[in-house]
Length: 461
Image 1 (cartoon, rainbow, N blue to C red):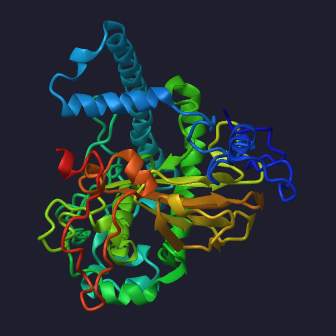
Image 2: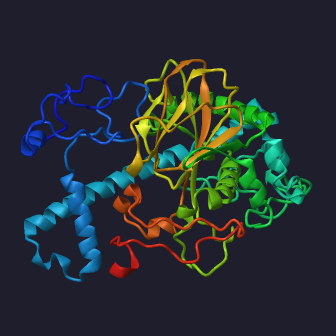
Image 3: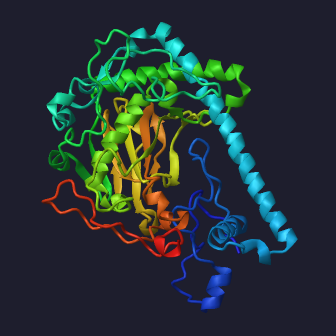
């Protein structure tokens, strides 16, 4: 059992010598030279390259398997546990209670982090008030992308003037404030009603889909790039991020629960929730034609596509930092090992000038079809976005000089795709591909939902 002999290289295991001169029997090959792990199984991880994932152990996860079996059984059979022995039920109960405690612990950490938003907003009002001015669509987008949005939207407001967000009793930020991406309803936001009309995220006519298809560049299968943010806006966000990093160091020194719990810098905590929502709007419009399979699962297949019920309905956007000198707490990395994202679609946009050495984004294909060699290498440039399926295997090469700062946007389809597939089918793409939209139907989704024989599919429910 296990992955075999100690690997001669720090990353991936391969047989210690060539077998061209000797072909052993099949049973001998399996027991003494087990097959190498898939290319996404990391044997050892250099410091500063870690991801938020447990180390690969090379053996079956019996506890996870049993919990998944039990979850399906409890859902499918009314009296599933009647045939179980008492000690088996006790073991399942202990496992579920441990998972529940893990959920509660991470919930407490999230609440502690969310409490940072209000004092940071107050800090920004005094430390850098110029960064809190009203933001409009024309301020954010690259000029070429701006031309694809309807002209009437260019002056629409994405964020009002910076003000301290309201924080509820649990320490979380509430919808409608700066930290949670509010100020998108109605007009104004600064109290005088003069800031202008708010951007309408459900305006299907705001985005020229045909023009966008000609605008993007295909880097590789399932990987596309396009200019997204203006240089001026990238500089503005980078200054907010710099202020947040300094503020977080002081804040963590006074709050133990937050320490070691901030590997990334979420946009929500920096008062940039409105930017997170706007990037989700861009991702939904972009992925409709770039990634049609992700739009194949919908609640009402007969309904026309509409931004009032978008496929991508969940978003988490955060800033990552890369440097030749990674930090102990993981908030600054040197690179990133090969991995996939827990997202349907990922959007990655660089904020800096690109005058760093290394830091190349390498992509290897989707997890079930990944190759040993990169299918694409993307050197980040200021304001340019690269977008790909979250299950596309990728890594960031070590930064050898300078600093690389990027916004990462994870987009999920909770009400559609993740309501139709179990995690195993989702991560291994065991579902039928969606048909490509017709070139003549620039905004058409597949005419019917696509389902596999997954246990979460309609044939099992």
